[in-house]
Image (tube, one colour):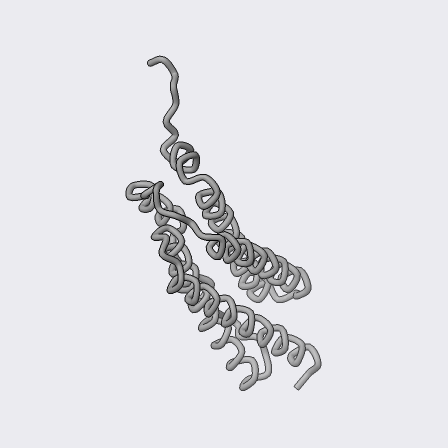
Amino acid sequence: MSSSTEKRIKALEVALNNESRERDFYLKHAERTSNSFGKLMFQSIAKDEDEHYQKILELHKNLKEKGKWPETIPLKVKGVDMKAVLKKVVASVDTSTKVDTDDMEAVKIAIDFESKGEKFYNDLRDSVDDPIEKEFYGMLASMEREHRLSLEDTYDYFKDPEGWYRMKEKRHLDGG
């Protein structure tokens, strides 16, 4: 097996470890929190991370068995439409629900996870020549970015539910 293939396998192993760790983190906090918005967000991202894990595991297995990056890979990952999750929450949000410091800290940690994941996948994308491999890592980076942005939105909600709700509803006093 070439050193290039071994390097790719090791990169996928790091990605598998990261995705697994993040999924477990999100599931733990979805179970722990009593805040419905936080619970929904953590569950949604955990589902995405599990799907990333499964796709990367397929690639890892293929690379170890065949010694080369596959010529075709599914570049679509179902994922969760975070904008739809946010719209659902806006429609049913209870701004009186308490947020505890563990929720705030979990979201801050999660934002850091996703930022590092985004950078990791962007770096992998930029370090490879194969267009399919490049596109795959780019897709993962963009999904990590989407998670990060959603978590930043969640953090804003936790800090100020009423203000967050007003912004999402886009209610304005325009005299009309």
